[in-house]
Image (cartoon, rainbow, N blue to C red; front, side, top):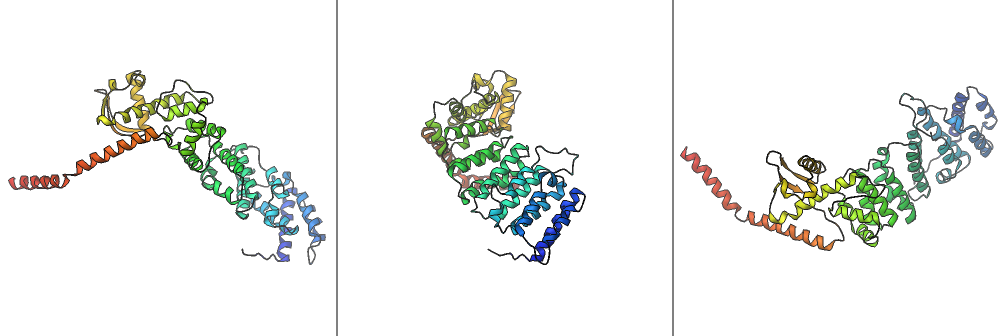
Length: 401
C-alpha cells in the first residue's frame, strides 16, 4: 500500500483554509484569529486544535454552506481531524467517530425543492459517505456500518432508489463478505436494500434470485420475497423458484402466503389474496393460467385456438378475454396473433413455468423438450433433397420461360 507523506506546512495551510470557510459562514474573522496561537513555525498542541476545530464545525455551521461547498469542506475537515489527532483512516471513520456522527447529523430530513439549488441535498451527504466507503480497505468492518447508514439515508429522505440500485446492488453481498459481516448482517442488509425498491423492478428480482441461490431462507425472508415478487409488474416470477426457495416453500407449505405463491407460480387461478397483496395478483394469476393451458395443449400440436376452446373461467366475456390475451402478450408470457373477426388466437410462443423442486413437472417438461427436438430432427432429415428439388424447379421454370 502506498504511503502519503504530509508536509507540516501543507497541514498548516489546510487549517488556515478551513478556518476561512468557518469565517465565511459566521461572517467574521474571530475563528481564524483564534487559531493563530497554534500556527507558529510548527503546529503546537494538535489535539487541542482538533478539539477547537470540531467544536466550531457544528451541524448549524456546516449545513449553512451551499450544497456545492459542503462536500469539499467536509473532506477537508475529516483530513484535519485525522492528521491532528494522529488517526488512521479506519479510526477516523469508525461508526461512533466524531466525523461520522457529524456527517449523519448534517443529513437533511427531506429533499429541497426543485427551485432550491443552494441548500444541502441528501445526495451530497450520500456522495460523501460513498467516498469514505471507498477510502476504507475492503476488510474494514466500518464499511458495513457505512452501507447501513447509506441505506437508512435513502429510506429516510426518500432518495431515488435508482441512484444505488446497480452500484450497491451488484456488489452488496461481496462487499459484506469481504468485511467479514456475519450471516445475519448480510441477510438483514440485503433485504433492507431490496425493500427500498418501491417499483419492484426486474433488476431487484434478479438480485433476489442470485441471493437465494446462495442463501437459505427463513419464513420471514420467504414472506418478503413473496410480497415483493407478487407486487412487481413482472407477471411470470416462476424463475425465482430455485432449490433453496423450493425447499423453504415445502417446509412452510401450510403458511397462507406460501400457499398463494405456490398456486400462483403453478399457473392456478387465485380467487382471493391475503394482505398486503392486492387484487391485481388475482388478475395476473389468470395470465399464468392461460399460459399453463397453452403449454398443456402442446402435445396436440395445436397452435390456433378458438375462444370457446379456452377454459370458461378465463373467458367471462369476449372483451375481457381479448384484454387478457393482450396483457399476456405485453407481459411477455405468450406471443401470438389475435383474430377478432373469427374469434381465434394463433399461438407462436409460450413461457413454460419451470419450478425447482417439482420433479414430476420437470420430468414432463423434459419429455416435451425431447419431443420437440425429435420433431426438429425429423423435419431436417430430408432437407438436402428438398433444397435440390426446389433448386431444380427454379431452374426448370426459368428454362421454360
